[in-house]
Length: 402
Image (spheres, one colour):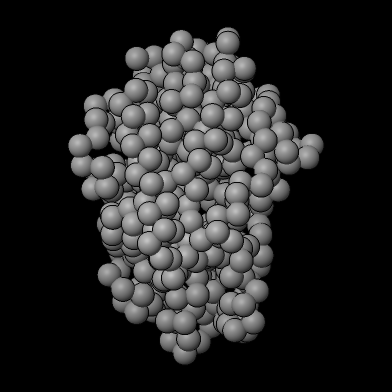
């Protein structure tokens, strides 16, 4: 099959979870004999396939620069902004998809499908709550956002919005959600968790999702198994926290809850970068907390594989955390909050109780203390893992062929 993968998150010096997923998908498809290209941005310098770890051809096809449109200064979400960029990505797909059997879009603009030619076999995957939320997170003022009223969304762009700003933002949100629903009805769509699909229906109750499927994220299990085999025995007391250091990811909340509660000899290693890193390092870095900064993927895997326990403390509602899946695949105990799509990932436990879910951050810290009180265990890796690309990919290829 000739497959064109598309994402505005590629290329980049520091690739997040979505971009890594696209590269993993592309390489897995190549390994199975498919012809795969990745269509991405052309405004990020000379970065290409080698930079992002893709073993096929990378095509720089569209610019995505300066997407702010002064929304923060004006205090409104602009109704024209996201459709503008969706048309730009759609036009790039039209230019490069002439010989493709399928186009698979992984990005932040759910309405791109409205702007591709009717002849194109188009599939998109929704990785976050950006189908109905313009910030993609549904996280505001340190807590999960539960409102679905479009006027309320103005608080995420202007805390003191008046009637005019609230009205303009409501128009933007209503149009965005309607365009998303139209795209979902028109083209095949993948949600990475049942949670994500339910969240969209909560905001758009009468949306036609008959062309939608739930297919979870996956990992390159042979690569993870190799990382686990190469790692030294898990170090007692070592806590691995791998991820972006940003609002919603729970790093600050976790470290505050840990203050004075970590057992002697325990050490939290935070691998990742982000806007909150400097302030959190200034407050918490010390003998029991180290900030390692951005780590390449092999280094992050080695850190997780050699940890006593992995912690994914996101306070936002993660849709389908690849970091959790990686910890499970590596046979490491994993602690997280029981939010979003994370509880669904218990289906991939290697042994009972491997994924421990807490209702609150203090409870998560207590579970961490209990885990650290036991000697770290190194379990043999089974031959297969339920979220391995080898098992998930056939479901995608079948969807491509429909």
